[in-house]
Length: 187
View 1 (cartoon, rainbow, N blue to C red):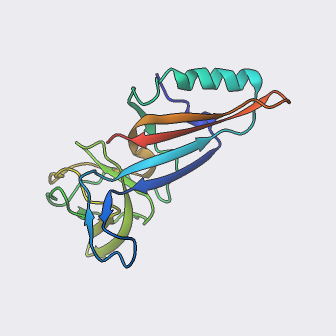
View 2: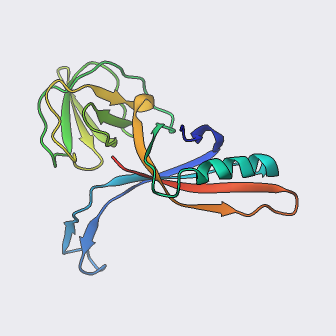
View 3: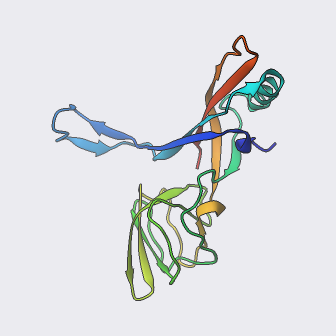
């Protein structure tokens, strides 16, 4: 079963972080929670004719809410195209930086992933020092990445997702409907 990501016109995404604070004012006592960061995608269709709307709704219902986990290719256009790089050194779980030996053009804001892990990250910073790029990640690594791990970048990133409770907009009197769903990363 392939999730019908191409049938959705509008995509919003955000990174959800588990941050614990005692009081909102000043944020003086804060800590990272026990949950790993994850991405949430909110997808919305254009107004669809009644038959197309019902067909897509039924297809989405086939995922049984959050029961099934499925893969989707990165739906956000990449800022650059990079292939066949590997990590320069082993990077331990919890680190927010990783080093890659490359001269290729990585971009802040693009998604990145590493072989052996289904978790996706956003590049939040980048420095280059003599062909070694240090990439700052938007959240800590959830597992250790070994030296020589393949770098998966931009359009090639594949998310492991499940549905969050799908929300539908009812069909109006003109026989058109809009489908809204939220997907949450399971990597």
